[in-house]
Figure 1 (cartoon, helix red, strand yellow):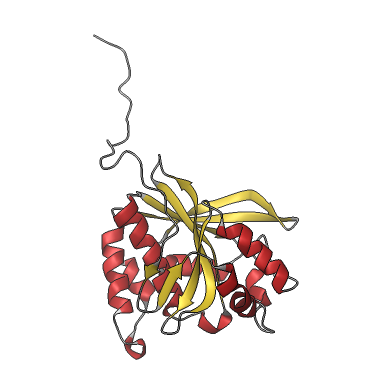
Figure 2: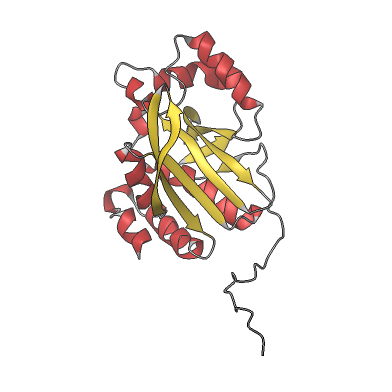
Amino acid sequence: MSNKPVLPVGDVVTGPTVAARPQAQVHTGSEVILRPIDVDLDGDPLFAAGHGTDGKWIWTYMPYGPFDDHAQMRLWLRESSGSADPRFFTVCQQPDAKPVGLVSYLSIAAEQRSIEVGHIWYSPQVQRTAVNTESIFLLLQHAFDDLGYRRVEWKCDALNARSRAAAERLGFRPEGIFKQHRIVRGRNRDTAWFAMMDHDWPAIQRSMQRWLGTAQSERGSLRDLTAN
């Protein structure tokens, strides 16, 4: 009789062995278009979106910005436009395709089929609208349905109450706080971790589609829909 212990192991993972990496392509919705950064088209409107008299607070939890002038932001956009990780997209609001913010994929671990959405910021004028909801919906849909990821992460400064509320509203589940995880702008950052799994996505996808497909005046709480 063997005395070897029987130890538990994880479930066998099915599906693709490696997820595909996100490419510089256009993602089109009814509220927004996500497209690769075009410095010439985006430099001035993105500077205006993030540097109005009531808007500089949006950089509080970012490791960069606000920028001193248009030229400095253009330089940062040029460097960012060539990056594959993070893979940045300009958020253009429909119907006139006006640049109003940025989103990205990052921490791309294709072999582990795990990816993060982050570097998210928008003009204050479009916050608390469907712009963020559809932007993240398009990123999630592409990551899960097209690229084959099992896990999409959302991370933010634990003090960033807006970002934490947005994560849960969009269907991400909290996984805890990583204490003293980063030093940002010379200050401690405890990081709040959230994630969404591929087996959770179909129900969340239906909830987001239902919410986005409802007239603005009749939309209820997306958080209530994604929590079910």
